[in-house]
Length: 391
Length: 120
Image 1: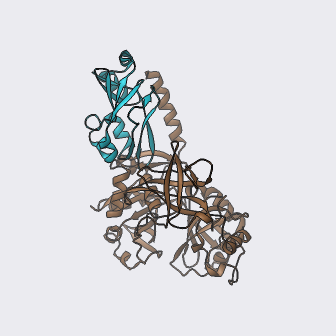
Image 2: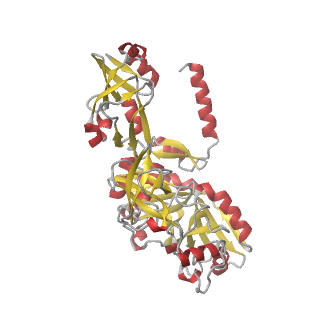
Image 3: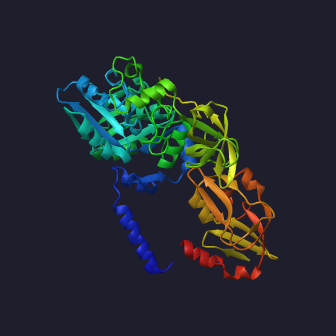
């Protein structure tokens, strides 16, 4: 490569990266030698020197710290100042029981479209007199506009002055307890205020790894000090987005844009567990959200296709967008893999994808086309690991 | 004689047969490998065609054939334990042996000094 070429490449590199946003932990990622990649408009660490495999295993064995500050943290307050009014307004956008959510508790949900597709998935917390929701980075602009337009009487505000850290793994509680002893009284899906190292934090006992753990919302200017203090613990290592993806896939959790999107209904996506009875036909607050007719129809008659776990029988990973077939031939296309990798804890390849309902029973054998070969996979109950949530 | 390609493969040439592997630099870039697929013995490969596939947790990558030739042997050890490619890429973790169609074609490849300059 000539030096002129190098200079041009450097300029192109700087152009690409200067357009990217940085989280409050960006300098820390660089100091930890994180390998930075563009993700949802942010310059994010895909891995650190340990590498994806070791980071994944470390999280399941001890504790991993993830920067998820790119995600959207949104506060929703009703004009009346009551939780109930904010909850009722959000119930018009999600098929989830928000009104029945107790103070200091959170649950999973999704915004639905008029056709019953999924616009984004999110975590929703009852904060006493308002709602706090966390949405995906790639959707946060659209989600914010959607809520602002369709939640009349509510003020919907993006916290762009807060970072979000995820601390995950069997040692997460012990690591956080060094800085905030009260953490031991929290249960899975609890949400609390906490003063940690003089920072006013919002802590939830939740995550995206299948392990016990926490997500900590912290003011941007105090995020680095908190991250460093957590990393000072010998059990805690920094973990990049690469391992975040393999961890969530082993845990059977959906990635928006891969496993769910505007073309997948919640029932097709096997997310009916997130639609409480009170929002279903016959329930006190049935329907009343976009696409309710489609979701009800899928609940009543069963969906045409289903998101399922897929365990490749061989050693080759079967990745997203691999076509699925009923037989080992191109004549019988049935669906597509939506996420797939090698599961370090599963010690073999793991995948998820959509198959016709008639082929969705665990134990059913299907085939995926990989580099011109038709590899057998077995439909498998999710998750691929045993979660360690502290219920 | 040791030769290198811009695609980060090394070739050790002996009696018209090239032992082919990936460089330390390539192994470091790929990260911990979890899957290796090698060509069939007897396969006729062409220069720059797909010869093998390596996969990390994150992604699959192709290994290209550096020259025209016929595969005479493959290293089953790296299929059984892909982590060998990370620990000893330029030694025991060779990929395959290729009986070259034209031995002189190897002259066009880089020597070690040129390769080191490339990755510097």
